[in-house]
Image (cartoon, rainbow, N blue to C red; front, side, top):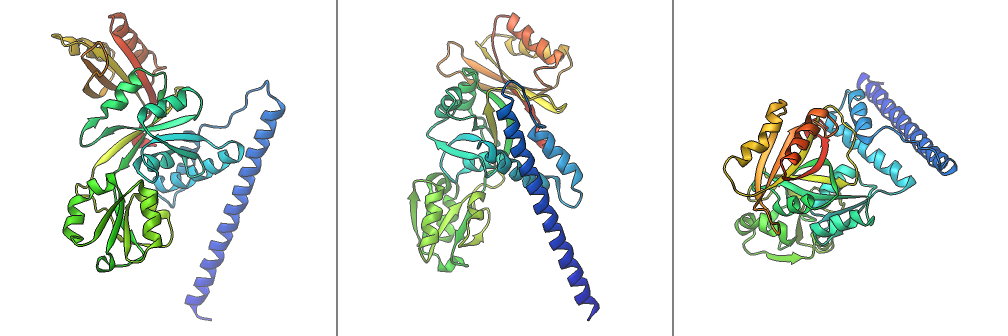
Length: 360
Protein backbone atom coordinates (compact mmCIF):
# COMPACT_ATOMS: atom_id res chain seq x y z
CA UNK A 1 0.00 0.00 0.00
CA UNK A 2 1.35 3.41 -0.97
CA UNK A 3 2.12 6.05 1.62
CA UNK A 4 -0.51 8.35 0.05
CA UNK A 5 -3.22 5.70 0.36
CA UNK A 6 -2.26 4.97 3.96
CA UNK A 7 -2.41 8.68 4.74
CA UNK A 8 -5.83 8.97 3.09
CA UNK A 9 -7.20 6.06 5.15
CA UNK A 10 -5.85 7.66 8.33
CA UNK A 11 -7.55 10.95 7.45
CA UNK A 12 -10.82 9.17 6.57
CA UNK A 13 -10.79 7.29 9.87
CA UNK A 14 -10.11 10.53 11.75
CA UNK A 15 -13.06 12.25 10.04
CA UNK A 16 -15.38 9.33 10.79
CA UNK A 17 -14.24 9.25 14.43
CA UNK A 18 -14.84 12.99 14.73
CA UNK A 19 -18.32 12.58 13.21
CA UNK A 20 -19.09 9.87 15.75
CA UNK A 21 -17.91 12.09 18.60
CA UNK A 22 -20.06 14.96 17.31
CA UNK A 23 -23.11 12.69 17.14
CA UNK A 24 -22.51 11.44 20.66
CA UNK A 25 -22.05 15.01 21.96
CA UNK A 26 -25.29 16.13 20.25
CA UNK A 27 -27.19 13.18 21.73
CA UNK A 28 -25.82 14.01 25.18
CA UNK A 29 -26.80 17.67 24.90
CA UNK A 30 -30.30 16.87 23.66
CA UNK A 31 -30.75 14.37 26.49
CA UNK A 32 -29.60 16.93 29.08
CA UNK A 33 -31.94 19.61 27.69
CA UNK A 34 -34.82 17.11 27.82
CA UNK A 35 -33.98 16.32 31.44
CA UNK A 36 -34.02 20.04 32.23
CA UNK A 37 -37.47 20.36 30.66
CA UNK A 38 -38.72 17.46 32.79
CA UNK A 39 -37.21 18.99 35.93
CA UNK A 40 -38.92 22.31 35.24
CA UNK A 41 -42.24 20.51 34.75
CA UNK A 42 -41.93 18.64 38.05
CA UNK A 43 -40.63 21.57 40.13
CA UNK A 44 -42.86 24.41 38.96
CA UNK A 45 -42.07 26.58 41.99
CA UNK A 46 -38.32 26.61 41.27
CA UNK A 47 -36.36 28.54 38.67
CA UNK A 48 -33.75 26.72 36.62
CA UNK A 49 -31.92 28.22 33.66
CA UNK A 50 -28.88 27.35 31.59
CA UNK A 51 -26.18 29.78 30.52
CA UNK A 52 -27.32 32.53 28.17
CA UNK A 53 -26.97 31.71 24.49
CA UNK A 54 -24.50 34.58 24.04
CA UNK A 55 -22.25 33.12 26.75
CA UNK A 56 -22.48 29.62 25.27
CA UNK A 57 -21.57 30.94 21.81
CA UNK A 58 -18.60 32.91 23.13
CA UNK A 59 -17.32 29.95 25.16
CA UNK A 60 -17.73 27.56 22.22
CA UNK A 61 -15.96 29.91 19.81
CA UNK A 62 -13.05 30.24 22.23
CA UNK A 63 -12.74 26.45 22.52
CA UNK A 64 -12.78 25.75 18.76
CA UNK A 65 -9.35 26.70 17.45
CA UNK A 66 -9.51 25.29 13.90
CA UNK A 67 -12.45 27.42 12.61
CA UNK A 68 -13.12 31.12 12.53
CA UNK A 69 -15.18 32.49 15.40
CA UNK A 70 -18.01 33.39 13.01
CA UNK A 71 -18.12 29.88 11.56
CA UNK A 72 -18.03 28.13 14.93
CA UNK A 73 -20.71 30.44 16.34
CA UNK A 74 -22.94 29.71 13.34
CA UNK A 75 -22.63 25.97 13.96
CA UNK A 76 -23.35 26.27 17.68
CA UNK A 77 -26.24 28.68 17.09
CA UNK A 78 -28.00 25.99 15.05
CA UNK A 79 -27.40 23.46 17.84
CA UNK A 80 -28.90 25.85 20.41
CA UNK A 81 -31.86 26.54 18.15
CA UNK A 82 -32.52 22.85 17.58
CA UNK A 83 -32.29 22.06 21.31
CA UNK A 84 -34.67 24.91 22.15
CA UNK A 85 -37.13 23.63 19.56
CA UNK A 86 -37.29 20.27 21.35
CA UNK A 87 -38.63 22.01 24.46
CA UNK A 88 -40.64 24.83 22.90
CA UNK A 89 -39.84 26.41 19.53
CA UNK A 90 -38.84 30.04 19.76
CA UNK A 91 -41.58 32.12 18.11
CA UNK A 92 -40.12 34.99 16.08
CA UNK A 93 -41.88 37.49 13.80
CA UNK A 94 -40.23 39.73 11.26
CA UNK A 95 -41.46 42.40 8.85
CA UNK A 96 -41.04 41.72 5.17
CA UNK A 97 -41.20 38.92 2.69
CA UNK A 98 -40.42 35.26 3.22
CA UNK A 99 -36.91 34.61 2.00
CA UNK A 100 -36.01 38.31 2.26
CA UNK A 101 -33.46 40.13 4.36
CA UNK A 102 -35.68 40.32 7.45
CA UNK A 103 -36.19 36.55 7.24
CA UNK A 104 -32.43 36.11 6.85
CA UNK A 105 -31.71 38.35 9.84
CA UNK A 106 -34.16 36.38 12.00
CA UNK A 107 -32.68 33.05 10.99
CA UNK A 108 -29.12 34.33 11.44
CA UNK A 109 -29.79 35.36 15.02
CA UNK A 110 -32.31 32.75 16.23
CA UNK A 111 -31.27 29.74 14.14
CA UNK A 112 -33.08 27.58 11.62
CA UNK A 113 -35.07 25.64 14.24
CA UNK A 114 -36.86 28.74 15.53
CA UNK A 115 -40.42 29.26 14.33
CA UNK A 116 -40.07 32.26 12.01
CA UNK A 117 -43.16 34.08 10.75
CA UNK A 118 -43.55 36.99 8.38
CA UNK A 119 -45.97 39.80 9.25
CA UNK A 120 -47.13 42.69 7.11
CA UNK A 121 -45.54 45.64 8.89
CA UNK A 122 -43.24 46.90 11.61
CA UNK A 123 -46.33 47.82 13.66
CA UNK A 124 -47.48 44.21 13.44
CA UNK A 125 -44.13 42.97 14.76
CA UNK A 126 -44.46 45.07 17.92
CA UNK A 127 -48.13 44.15 18.32
CA UNK A 128 -47.37 40.43 18.14
CA UNK A 129 -44.67 40.72 20.81
CA UNK A 130 -46.79 42.95 23.07
CA UNK A 131 -49.81 40.63 23.03
CA UNK A 132 -47.76 37.43 23.38
CA UNK A 133 -48.29 36.12 19.85
CA UNK A 134 -44.50 35.85 19.55
CA UNK A 135 -41.66 35.95 22.02
CA UNK A 136 -39.34 37.93 19.76
CA UNK A 137 -39.27 40.10 16.69
CA UNK A 138 -36.79 41.42 14.15
CA UNK A 139 -36.84 44.85 12.48
CA UNK A 140 -34.38 46.93 10.42
CA UNK A 141 -32.81 49.64 12.57
CA UNK A 142 -30.12 51.30 10.45
CA UNK A 143 -28.80 51.15 6.90
CA UNK A 144 -25.40 52.26 5.67
CA UNK A 145 -27.17 54.23 2.94
CA UNK A 146 -29.93 56.10 4.82
CA UNK A 147 -28.98 55.90 8.51
CA UNK A 148 -31.56 55.15 11.18
CA UNK A 149 -34.84 53.67 9.98
CA UNK A 150 -37.28 56.40 10.99
CA UNK A 151 -40.34 54.14 11.20
CA UNK A 152 -38.63 51.66 13.52
CA UNK A 153 -37.29 54.45 15.73
CA UNK A 154 -40.69 56.15 16.04
CA UNK A 155 -42.43 52.87 16.85
CA UNK A 156 -39.88 51.77 19.48
CA UNK A 157 -39.99 55.21 21.12
CA UNK A 158 -43.69 54.60 21.86
CA UNK A 159 -43.46 50.90 22.76
CA UNK A 160 -42.44 48.86 25.80
CA UNK A 161 -40.72 46.34 23.52
CA UNK A 162 -36.94 46.45 23.92
CA UNK A 163 -33.91 45.90 21.71
CA UNK A 164 -32.13 42.71 22.82
CA UNK A 165 -29.45 42.35 20.16
CA UNK A 166 -28.15 43.87 16.95
CA UNK A 167 -27.82 41.82 13.76
CA UNK A 168 -25.52 43.29 11.09
CA UNK A 169 -26.40 42.04 7.61
CA UNK A 170 -24.93 42.64 4.17
CA UNK A 171 -27.61 43.29 1.55
CA UNK A 172 -26.86 40.78 -1.21
CA UNK A 173 -28.85 39.21 -4.03
CA UNK A 174 -27.63 36.28 -6.10
CA UNK A 175 -28.66 34.88 -9.48
CA UNK A 176 -29.66 31.24 -9.11
CA UNK A 177 -30.88 28.77 -11.73
CA UNK A 178 -30.85 25.17 -12.89
CA UNK A 179 -28.96 26.59 -15.84
CA UNK A 180 -25.23 27.03 -15.35
CA UNK A 181 -24.62 30.01 -17.64
CA UNK A 182 -26.33 33.33 -18.32
CA UNK A 183 -26.96 32.44 -21.97
CA UNK A 184 -29.35 29.63 -20.98
CA UNK A 185 -31.58 31.93 -18.89
CA UNK A 186 -34.70 33.32 -20.59
CA UNK A 187 -36.90 34.13 -17.60
CA UNK A 188 -36.07 35.66 -14.20
CA UNK A 189 -38.34 35.58 -11.16
CA UNK A 190 -37.77 38.00 -8.30
CA UNK A 191 -39.55 39.83 -5.50
CA UNK A 192 -39.96 43.59 -5.90
CA UNK A 193 -37.12 44.50 -3.52
CA UNK A 194 -34.67 42.32 -5.47
CA UNK A 195 -35.81 43.77 -8.80
CA UNK A 196 -35.25 47.30 -7.55
CA UNK A 197 -31.83 46.45 -6.11
CA UNK A 198 -30.68 44.71 -9.31
CA UNK A 199 -32.38 46.83 -11.98
CA UNK A 200 -29.22 47.93 -13.82
CA UNK A 201 -27.72 44.45 -13.67
CA UNK A 202 -30.80 42.93 -15.27
CA UNK A 203 -30.97 45.60 -17.98
CA UNK A 204 -27.31 45.13 -18.85
CA UNK A 205 -27.05 41.34 -18.82
CA UNK A 206 -30.61 40.18 -19.59
CA UNK A 207 -32.18 42.78 -21.90
CA UNK A 208 -34.29 40.14 -23.68
CA UNK A 209 -35.25 37.98 -20.70
CA UNK A 210 -38.75 38.03 -19.22
CA UNK A 211 -38.53 39.54 -15.73
CA UNK A 212 -41.45 38.53 -13.49
CA UNK A 213 -42.30 40.17 -10.15
CA UNK A 214 -43.36 37.61 -7.54
CA UNK A 215 -45.13 37.75 -4.19
CA UNK A 216 -41.94 37.05 -2.23
CA UNK A 217 -38.44 35.62 -2.51
CA UNK A 218 -39.56 32.08 -1.71
CA UNK A 219 -42.10 32.09 -4.54
CA UNK A 220 -39.40 33.32 -6.93
CA UNK A 221 -37.12 30.48 -5.85
CA UNK A 222 -39.83 27.83 -6.21
CA UNK A 223 -40.75 29.00 -9.71
CA UNK A 224 -37.14 29.04 -10.86
CA UNK A 225 -36.52 25.50 -9.60
CA UNK A 226 -39.60 24.19 -11.44
CA UNK A 227 -39.03 25.76 -14.87
CA UNK A 228 -36.18 25.09 -17.32
CA UNK A 229 -34.44 28.21 -18.54
CA UNK A 230 -35.67 30.16 -15.50
CA UNK A 231 -33.67 31.88 -12.77
CA UNK A 232 -34.36 33.74 -9.56
CA UNK A 233 -32.81 36.58 -7.62
CA UNK A 234 -32.45 35.40 -4.04
CA UNK A 235 -30.81 36.24 -0.73
CA UNK A 236 -28.36 34.00 1.12
CA UNK A 237 -31.32 31.96 2.35
CA UNK A 238 -31.90 30.78 -1.20
CA UNK A 239 -28.37 29.37 -1.39
CA UNK A 240 -29.46 26.63 1.02
CA UNK A 241 -32.16 25.41 -1.38
CA UNK A 242 -31.11 22.45 -3.50
CA UNK A 243 -31.78 21.89 -7.18
CA UNK A 244 -29.97 24.82 -8.75
CA UNK A 245 -26.63 26.49 -9.40
CA UNK A 246 -25.21 29.79 -8.22
CA UNK A 247 -24.87 31.50 -11.60
CA UNK A 248 -23.54 34.76 -10.21
CA UNK A 249 -23.02 36.06 -6.68
CA UNK A 250 -23.82 39.56 -5.38
CA UNK A 251 -25.48 41.08 -8.45
CA UNK A 252 -27.03 44.11 -6.71
CA UNK A 253 -26.37 47.43 -8.44
CA UNK A 254 -24.90 49.10 -5.34
CA UNK A 255 -22.57 46.71 -3.49
CA UNK A 256 -21.50 46.81 0.14
CA UNK A 257 -24.76 48.11 1.55
CA UNK A 258 -25.25 46.98 5.13
CA UNK A 259 -28.43 46.91 7.17
CA UNK A 260 -28.35 46.60 10.93
CA UNK A 261 -31.36 44.69 12.16
CA UNK A 262 -32.36 44.43 15.82
CA UNK A 263 -33.85 41.55 17.75
CA UNK A 264 -36.72 42.67 19.98
CA UNK A 265 -38.32 41.25 23.13
CA UNK A 266 -39.55 42.12 26.60
CA UNK A 267 -36.47 42.18 28.84
CA UNK A 268 -33.01 43.69 28.93
CA UNK A 269 -30.38 40.97 28.47
CA UNK A 270 -27.78 40.81 31.27
CA UNK A 271 -24.70 42.95 30.77
CA UNK A 272 -21.65 41.40 29.17
CA UNK A 273 -19.03 44.15 29.61
CA UNK A 274 -19.20 44.99 25.89
CA UNK A 275 -22.67 46.50 25.72
CA UNK A 276 -24.34 49.52 24.21
CA UNK A 277 -27.53 51.29 25.25
CA UNK A 278 -29.87 52.99 22.78
CA UNK A 279 -31.75 56.03 24.07
CA UNK A 280 -34.13 58.31 22.24
CA UNK A 281 -35.02 61.85 23.37
CA UNK A 282 -37.94 63.84 21.94
CA UNK A 283 -37.10 67.51 21.43
CA UNK A 284 -38.36 70.79 20.08
CA UNK A 285 -36.01 72.94 18.01
CA UNK A 286 -34.19 75.34 20.37
CA UNK A 287 -30.68 76.78 20.80
CA UNK A 288 -28.31 74.55 22.76
CA UNK A 289 -30.81 71.73 23.21
CA UNK A 290 -28.52 69.06 21.71
CA UNK A 291 -25.56 70.18 23.81
CA UNK A 292 -27.73 69.93 26.92
CA UNK A 293 -28.62 66.35 26.00
CA UNK A 294 -24.99 65.35 25.50
CA UNK A 295 -23.72 66.93 28.72
CA UNK A 296 -24.91 64.17 31.15
CA UNK A 297 -22.91 61.61 29.15
CA UNK A 298 -19.85 63.84 28.74
CA UNK A 299 -19.79 64.65 32.46
CA UNK A 300 -19.60 60.92 33.23
CA UNK A 301 -17.09 60.20 30.45
CA UNK A 302 -19.56 57.93 28.65
CA UNK A 303 -18.73 57.51 24.99
CA UNK A 304 -21.59 58.47 22.65
CA UNK A 305 -21.00 55.94 19.92
CA UNK A 306 -23.71 57.27 17.61
CA UNK A 307 -26.01 60.27 17.43
CA UNK A 308 -28.71 60.77 14.83
CA UNK A 309 -31.71 63.06 14.38
CA UNK A 310 -34.99 61.87 12.89
CA UNK A 311 -38.37 63.61 12.44
CA UNK A 312 -40.85 62.79 15.23
CA UNK A 313 -43.85 61.59 13.25
CA UNK A 314 -47.19 61.89 15.01
CA UNK A 315 -45.65 63.51 18.10
CA UNK A 316 -46.08 66.91 19.69
CA UNK A 317 -42.28 67.16 19.42
CA UNK A 318 -40.38 68.03 16.27
CA UNK A 319 -37.41 65.66 16.50
CA UNK A 320 -36.32 62.35 17.93
CA UNK A 321 -32.63 62.21 18.83
CA UNK A 322 -31.14 58.72 18.88
CA UNK A 323 -28.11 58.17 21.12
CA UNK A 324 -26.18 54.93 21.27
CA UNK A 325 -23.77 55.01 24.18
CA UNK A 326 -21.21 52.58 25.50
CA UNK A 327 -22.37 50.67 28.58
CA UNK A 328 -25.42 48.84 29.92
CA UNK A 329 -28.53 50.41 31.42
CA UNK A 330 -27.78 48.64 34.73
CA UNK A 331 -24.42 50.42 35.06
CA UNK A 332 -24.70 53.38 37.41
CA UNK A 333 -23.07 56.04 35.17
CA UNK A 334 -25.35 55.21 32.25
CA UNK A 335 -28.47 55.08 34.42
CA UNK A 336 -27.53 58.34 36.17
CA UNK A 337 -27.01 60.15 32.86
CA UNK A 338 -30.42 59.02 31.61
CA UNK A 339 -32.11 60.04 34.86
CA UNK A 340 -30.51 63.48 34.56
CA UNK A 341 -32.03 63.81 31.09
CA UNK A 342 -35.44 62.86 32.47
CA UNK A 343 -35.09 65.32 35.34
CA UNK A 344 -34.74 68.12 32.78
CA UNK A 345 -38.35 67.45 31.78
CA UNK A 346 -37.69 65.84 28.41
CA UNK A 347 -39.34 62.73 27.00
CA UNK A 348 -36.66 60.05 27.28
CA UNK A 349 -37.03 56.41 26.27
CA UNK A 350 -34.47 53.64 26.66
CA UNK A 351 -34.85 51.46 23.58
CA UNK A 352 -32.60 48.68 24.85
CA UNK A 353 -29.20 47.50 26.06
CA UNK A 354 -27.43 44.81 24.05
CA UNK A 355 -24.00 43.31 23.32
CA UNK A 356 -21.94 44.94 20.58
CA UNK A 357 -22.32 42.78 17.48
CA UNK A 358 -18.73 43.24 16.41
CA UNK A 359 -17.70 41.11 19.40
CA UNK A 360 -20.54 38.58 19.17
